[in-house]
Amino acid sequence: MARNAAAHIEGPLADRGGGWRPLVYCWRGGQRSGSFTVILKQIGWQADTVAGGYQSYRRLVADMLYEQDFPAHVVLIDGGTGTAKTRLLTHLAAQGGQVLDLEEMAAHRGSVFGPIAGGQPPQKAFESTLAAHITALDPARPVYVEAESTRIGRINLPPALARAMKAAEVVRLTAPMAARVTHLLSDYADLVADPDTLDTILGRLVRYHGHDQVAEWRALAATGDLARLVESLIVTHYDPRYTRIAGPGQAAPLCLPDLEEATLAATARRLIADHG
Image 1 (cartoon, one colour):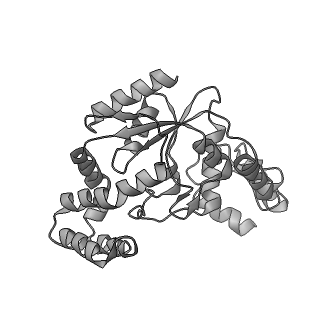
Image 2: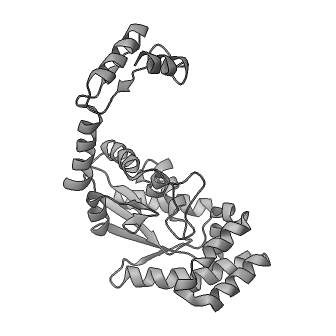
Image 3: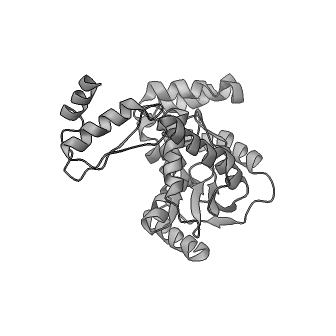
């Protein structure tokens, strides 16, 4: 215990100021966290422990996400691939809207092309991050969430949030094809710069579209005709899947003339004015 405490104090905690207020936990909230807290208090930090340890904390998180109802009204930002839903969330947050960016928390862009460098967090770590964001919400105000399936990569959305998203008010974005292609080329610049990874991911689409179609996409990628590749993927793969999943009865579309920052900022203002 003393060896570990010294390693922490001389290492990652060395730059902490006198007003730091650490919250310490171990598995059961017993002697390990208690002893370390005493040492931190002797240094002068306002340390405290999690009563009952991580087990107690985890029960609170699980109760919030699996048993309770979601505490705020959800407005779902929906739309086909490339309609800049995540960028719109950024503008909503910048203008004071309450936002849950699930793809950021899950470290995944929510499609077969979605993995990003560094990989995804464990399920429990994702849930801890999500619970912290939910705790900070004002229940009297709406929260904007991008439409997702019940899985983002290998992360499962907990039932409380999944239920709220299923029952949510829906804002469905549309945008011109050229704008969608430009947005995706920018958003997936990491794949554009990594031809081998792009080719590997395209290969995973054989089971959906067959060898001939994927060979055509691979040829477009190999010749650098990425705009045509992206448009073909939207038309052949993504839009049909979105139409099938969305089904009938969707909200009237919010048609954006383009996906420029000014347009997204104006859309965010409109949504906040309409929903409070």
